[in-house]
Image (cartoon, rainbow, N blue to C red; front, side, top):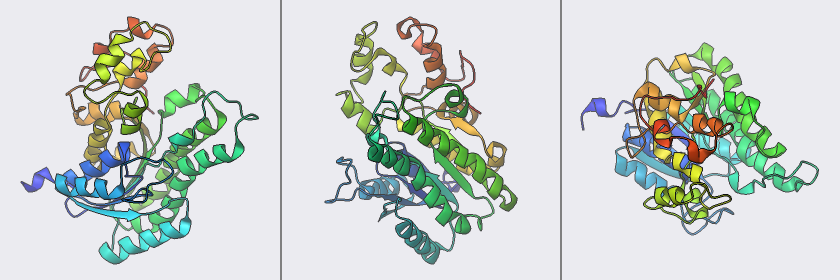
Length: 328
């Protein structure tokens, strides 16, 4: 492999929440670019988390190594500050540096939709908040001392929804709304603190992510999802809903983040909110099928026009944006 094919060779990355979905894909793409990637999470072989899923951090680390990087699986509960401190100490002892931090823990299995605050089971709501936000805060708190020693440190906070979209849209429940917007604000705040050290912090959001969990929830596969969604055009409460046609694999976001990490001018994005589509357009990357799904524009357009009347192909074409910008 030519050295230019691995622009992150020699870099050390930590992907918190690398077990599955976007976190797994991001870890793999960073590895493909040559990085050494610590892949953390709670699900290990023989000891799954309460998500009760088959994916494991060992499986992710193996994919990172197969892609050309070095994958290192470490079982960590990021709600436990002492476990996170031990992780950062290990990284410092083994490498003496940390260049890239990706906070991708989301807590989606703890979401209960359309339930008002006074009826929401408080313990479950706080579990969502602590898993989806406090983990990010703890990990950054522990990692930034080491990370800011790198002259080109990058922090990526992964959330659901761009800053512009979330600013004008209520996200179904108080706990979900606050969790996802707090992650974005954390990126904004961190950007101000790391900038004097040469660092960059951004918040990123995929569109409608076709993760392993989402495919299973809709009882479709990567081979059948499009046909199943198309078959439900104009049908109310169908599974999967027709608008699933705008979904994307975790690869598009991951490719965009890897390109961002390799960009010597990444500081132009400091404190900003970016969608997977924003990154894809700027860096010229695509999803696995060669398209660039613009989910947030499609979702916004659905507010004034039925999804089945929208030309979904126009929202999947590279270098086209039929709706308003969804970032910033």
